[in-house]
Amino acid sequence: MASEKVQTLTDTNFDQSVLKSPQTVLVDFWAEWCGPCRRLAPTIDELAHDYDGRVVVGKLNVDENPATQSRYSIMGIPTVLIFKGGEIVEQVVGLADKTTFKKLIDKHV
Amino acid sequence: MALRDVVIIGSGPAGLTAALYAARANLKPIVIEGLEAGGQLMLTTMVENWPGFRDGIMGPNLMEEMRAQAGRFGAEFVTDSVTSVDFRHRPFTTRTAHAEFQSRAVIIATGASARLLGLPSERALIGHGVSTCATCDGFFFRGKPIAVVGGGDSALEEAIFLTKFASHVTLVHRRDTLRASKIMQDKAVSNPKISFAWNSEVDDVLDPAAGTVSGIILRNTVTGERKTLAVEGLFVAIGHTPNTALFKGQIETDPAGYIVTNEGTRTNIPGVFACGDVQDQIYRQAITAAGSGCMAAIDAEHYVDGLPQHVGDVTELSSEV
Image (tube, rainbow over all chains, first blue to last red; front, side, top):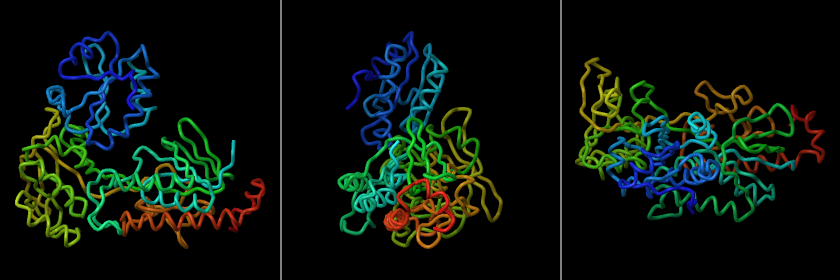
């Protein structure tokens, strides 16, 4: 069950919700068929909860949003990108634990 | 903090079978699942060599069943990774970022993780055309030519799986014969979308500056000749490295990093047992991992049964058990 604090990002809302956001934004690129992505999901939910109001946490389904997937050359999932001021400031490919994400986020909050 | 009988580190076939047996022996095991919970089978599709399933079973489903089965008998699960262990003092301590567990016995079932070639260009392009997981990333290579490096069953399984997406798969192997089982070799050789680059090593991956894979440079291991193969993806399936960094300096390992076990699953520290791929560089099968997980639980049960009730006494016993 995904947390309601996690935003659903799409090709349509990506510019507005991520690139133009005044806050730091964490984006989880995922797909239904990706086992490791499902394993990462609870961590993403917890991060959304922990950073509520300070960092935007969103998920982008690569199956449904190919334009954003190809724009960032995402060729492996899960991939997590952290954006600040419309620029990628951190990138994590594959699984990582919550502590790792927290350290990366805290550099940009 | 409650003292436990046994902490199990890892949740692949070895860890979960150990959990099942330990739970049924009333040892109330706690399983710390780790980052790659479920182990290597979570990244496979159809498993055709797990006995009891004549038509095969999907790897992730098999692991889900194993976890539920251990849970049914009372095994507890912690969805976290171990950050450090202390096997020098008793009871043993196992720590995660959020908790600490003390136990009379520990079963190590941390398995092995995919090995990389070790090229800087390879590392730079992980997630952008370089992958160690065909089932995760194959989808992104629809209609594209790709290469798979390796010569074992896993490499061939990945190559065959990837033909569902890729326009062509070149299997790159440093020798002129494969290690893989005959049945997998036959499947690969008869697949019209797979060709072989024999006696070849990957010297470099192009093009880190562009942020995508546009080719690989192959070096012939016999002639030394170098040539570029135009591919848009590179899947690395050259084997695994045991996950033993956590135990460095505390548990005896062989030069390759595998935990040394004696008389079943015993490590050099009485009360610490190891099972599965972390101590096996010969068989490395799900079924052998599960078998050794069962052994570790039985060994741990015997060990715990032989301990006195008071933990304080245990320290002096340690060298004789």
